[in-house]
Amino acid sequence: MTRLRRPARPVLVVLVASALAGGVALVTFQQRAAEAEAKLAAAERALHPAFADAPELWDVDAEAALAAFEAAEASGAEGGVGRAEAQALAYLQAGELVFAEEALDEARRAQGHWTPGLRVLAAEIARAGLQSDAAREHVARALATDPEHPRALLAKADLALDARDGRAAATALARLAEEVPAWAPLHDRRGLALELMGEHAAAREAFERAVELDPRWASGWINLGRARRRAGETVAAREAFDAALGVAPENADGWLGRGLCDLDAGDGAAAREAFERARELAPHDAQAQVALADLAAAEGDGAAAIAGYRAALAENGRDAGVWVKLGNALVRAGQGAEAEEAYRSAIARAPQLAAAHNGLGAALMRRGAVEHASTALERAARLDPVDPHPWMNLALLHEGRGDTEAARRAWEAALERQPDQALARARLAALR
Image 1 (cartoon, one colour):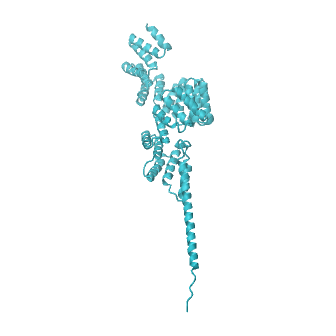
Image 2 (spheres, one colour):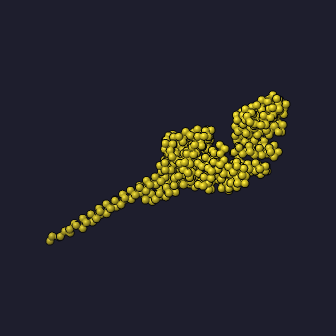
Image 3 (cartoon, rainbow, N blue to C red):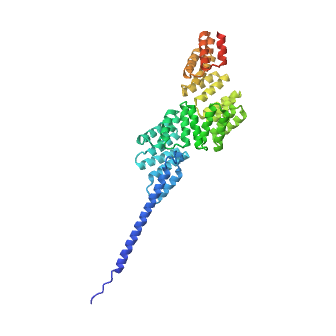
């Protein structure tokens, strides 16, 4: 008896169904992979926007970029490098520098080498931590790899401004001008560089261009206010500081500038109010404290002035100019020995500061240390070819020693620097 064979159709159906299921799974996998790659690409764009869209690292939304990388990784993408870099930037923006360094190190290890972008991030972390040498090294290495890297050029300019090297800053900024010609902060920085180079008229034009491009750029208004005040335009300067405060009411520099204009206008009460507001907004910034001490000195309150300068130096003992102001206040208070110490502290921090040598010479002269005083005053006169005061002090010193001819030459030198100096004219006439 012949056995009937079962038809093969069910097996065929199963095989076809399995093939269809496998095809669906493959399509689903490919779709998910494509979605993951799309999310990763979006995260990369968030972290590395075009320079024109976010010139500074502070303009990048690091938290959004970090969230985008985490979403991409959750979809199966490999975003370890970008996620760690975004985390480092987020920590930098939050001021968490130790954590920023750790995250940056993770990004570098995941990448396997330094990229220009990672170098720039490392430079900004170092700069925020006041490690200028390390920051400059990272920027130099970034530019060695990519000489036109825009954020590396911007970092180079900022570091040059920090070091008061206007020419280096201007050179770096000029290379960025084609990239972002209408970016207000670029013109603001250019103004600062020109100021350092002594080109004050051009600097003022740069600040004016900055606020023309972006009337809400508070820093540009503040720098324009400073430039106008330097030119003796008190009313116009105050208008600029008021514009800054209209944009950023909590800006301490704006209040400081307004107070200085009020002081120039003879309104001590308004100046004090503005300085105190500036100090309230930036309690660890010594500038407002110095301004309050200057106001006390102008009002004849020597004790308050001395206390104010000392408080400012407790916040920032590196400012040689404040040491000179303290020395001057101590001289007026009859505290000669302490004044000498203050002037020497200024010289230790800024050996080329003529005012410090002049102050020291005057203090030494008061206590009869004539030879040392003469050396200090001659040094001051060489360092500053404009200020008449070192020559005036030298003239008084020579008069005290009975050296009429030397005194006459010193008074004449003082008048060459300031022809309308009444005291110098009177003393010189008395010697003839």
